[in-house]
Length: 88
Image 1 (cartoon, helix red, strand yellow):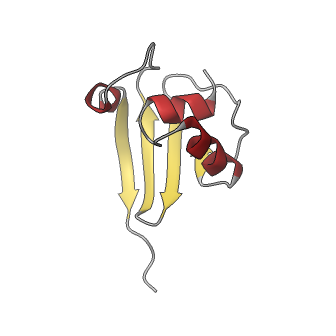
Image 2 (cartoon, helix red, strand yellow):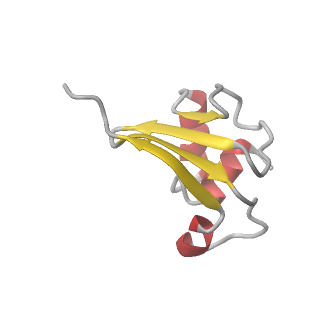
Image 3 (cartoon, rainbow, N blue to C red):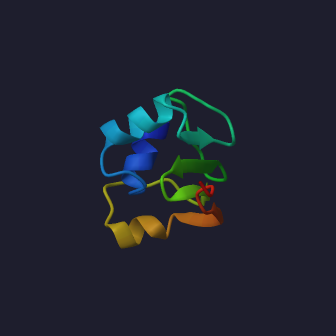
């Protein structure tokens, strides 16, 4: 499944467009690497998201099979780490 689709389906972004832009800007990494939005994702992969709230890393436990609610999507990922934004 495409990286941008997984980000949107797991409710890590509000839309696939936002997810795709984050991937292109290097704000969403797959296994610590910058990849294209169409790169494949599989269970066990780690997604790192960087934003104003800090950096967060999640492990994909299972790929979504259909559109899910936010609560159901949370069951498919496990948060590995969370770092606050750097002090200014």
